Amino acid sequence: MSREHAEHNETLCDYIAVSGEWPDWVVTTAFYAALHYARAALFPRTVDDREYANFDVYWERTREEFRQDKHQRLCQLVFEHMRPGYDAYRFLMNESKTARYNEYRTPVAIAHRARCALQTVKDLCR
Image (cartoon, rainbow, N blue to C red):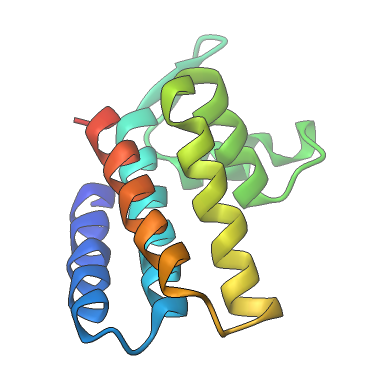
């Protein structure tokens, strides 16, 4: 399901980018597409002889072990298991948070970088 969700978000990201009107939403949809591509690439997964069908199951069973929120934990998993995509993923996570919570006036250049970062993450998840 995550890969389909990623493709759905990426399609929306591309559609919004063509309009040129909402670069903040280009960044946000790029991040959520990358998030779902990463989840699909990382799961199912076996950790310490425990099998996890997807990230949500993993999070529910392990969240007490980590002092991270859900987004930080997934970012850490990207760092541990998809290191070449870590900088791109972290950029998307941080810029999406900025776009959503701090300042919705995202420069078009950041939206362009977000689409490039999404492509980097997507390529690693094939």
